Image 1: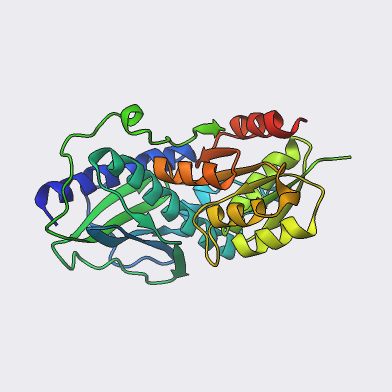
Image 2 (image 1 turned 120 degrees about the vertical axis):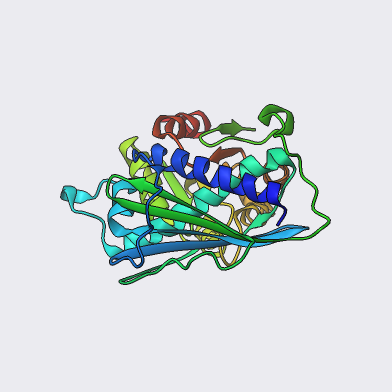
Length: 182
Length: 123
């Protein structure tokens, strides 16, 4: 991964995560402290992507409490969503996060196809220290816990991208919340 | 009689979220979890007023589902709207060519979703 592309990833991971959680009423702020070694009641969503000169995956790791605070559906009689609903919603959050990241990277001429996400839940989930130079990770604080988002990508030498983003209207990328009727 | 809308998405949470919004606006909502099941539901329910469909799903993606549904002349007038995280112009164009009537990027605003549905099928 070229350094500048890596810095783009890091910038957009932080920005897109904060924007996405804000859509669901949760403020994320940068977390500079130690990330938790392992998390009880943890959840993680993973989604892959692949393009002509790039492939990799995005991981969103946090706690059930954080995911619960973003859950968009009011349950009958105010009951809290069950664990299977939270795991499903973690998948969807990782999907929406990668989609948002993709929409930003399209403005830099970086394009890929997204897979469908998977997620898991468990006690003592641990986010490993950076395992390779191609991994970028950001740690963010929500009112109810820490959110770690990381991306690991293999980038071919032939990948060219724009360091400065094009205008969204010039590229024609539809933005989050846009409604287009044909 | 309430108008019936099919919501196709591999996320149960999203189906529930969209369903709750549409139900609050007076629509009857049925669900399917991927493109294959969505296609089967369309074939089974000739009274559908609208389909709202994700793009990236297992088994069959949403754009292929639209193309398959539209290949049957009985569904020519059935409006299908994509609801997805994707904003890539090439995908929007593919969906349009396949016969989709709209494209909404997640996360959606409830009032925008309802306005789009009302425009396509009425109250």
